[in-house]
Amino acid sequence: MRVVIALLMMASAADAKPIAETPRPDIQVAQSWSCQPRKTCSAISSCEEARYYLENCSWGGKLDRDSDGIPCESIC
Image 1 (cartoon, rainbow, N blue to C red):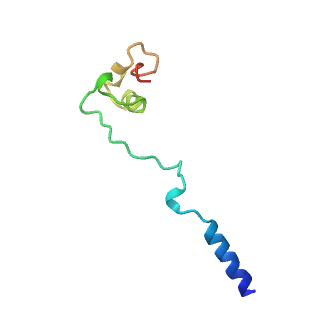
Image 2 (image 1 turned 90 degrees about the vertical axis):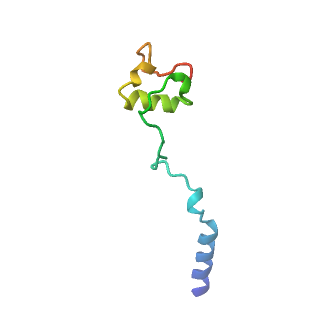
Image 3 (image 1 turned 120 degrees about the vertical axis):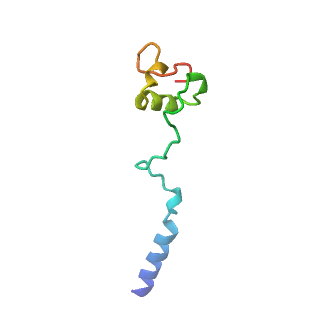
């Protein structure tokens, strides 16, 4: 009986993946974007950043010139 338990423990330990390799979709990486200073589309490096400004900053609407909900259309 002890041998079987020991073998099961060894097998499950060998199959286990380290925590660092397991993706966590429920955890988001913090962004360093801020509403200050104001930015223009030429100073924005990604569509995600442009969307953040549109949704979170009082001046973000200026990034969506045609008011279609898509900021910085040359990027997005």
